Length: 349
Ligand code: SAH
Image (cartoon, rainbow, N blue to C red; front, top):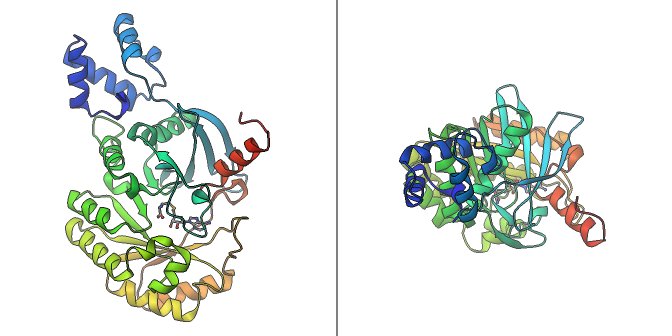
């Protein structure tokens, strides 16, 4: 049993099985989710006997820091963590005036196959548990000694492909007895798994749903994202509408601009037509070229022209700041480089 993935109520049941009083569960929960203890030995107000029992029966999830890189440009920090089975995941800390934002991974690898993305090149290894998603945030908060105010699930993996663990993670992250991060400060990004988007809408959470759109017709989208063979843009737009109706939350459409592929005047017109029908905000992302593919970034001028076209039609639109460009900031790049170095006989430490 993964103790750090349990709700407080579930923890009370476990603690009573060990013959301890219910208030011990609250103390334990507090150590795990507020004080961010890295192991049972830190939990000094629990008896040594109780800690020993816990250690015997409940393995404690705590990620091990393998590497940190700090951007010389903007202070963005990229973390590489080892899981208990030796798998590696990466997370990113971005520092903004309004607070600290952490981008976490939801899976080891990914099976979605998006053409421009480094995370998917080796396929899916496994899903992350709720505790492994939480601990990326906990270890980073402990590392910098500051509170994390925003969380985006935009690292490696497709969160909707790990739906149950994702939901439990969100509930624990936003629990008032835990870190108590506001749901409004949590964003989940998906390549567009329609049934799960609808299921999430029914949960009526106050989180932001971001859809990786990246193209405006099914034909063009299929060239970038294999998932487009499964769900059409029309089905996606219905699911987005439904999400808004159920939650009242404005959606984000992510649109990575690839030079000569999806950044033409026609693309802008089609994106306007789609966005007009939704309560949404468009986030333009200059594609971050990965060396395994030959996609190139749209030039700065083309990006501004594209943005102006959208704004003229009153579409709320921002260009994503490229943070951590000098430290393999894009999805999956750091982990991948590490794996490749390892295969070549380099060290993992
Ligand atoms: N699987 C989820 C979340 C992870 S990716 C999803 O698809 O949304 C987070 C965002 O970064 C997605 O919009 C993804 O399409 C985009 N992305 C991935 N690799 C990129 C790259 N090299 N350049 C620009 N955007 C990229």
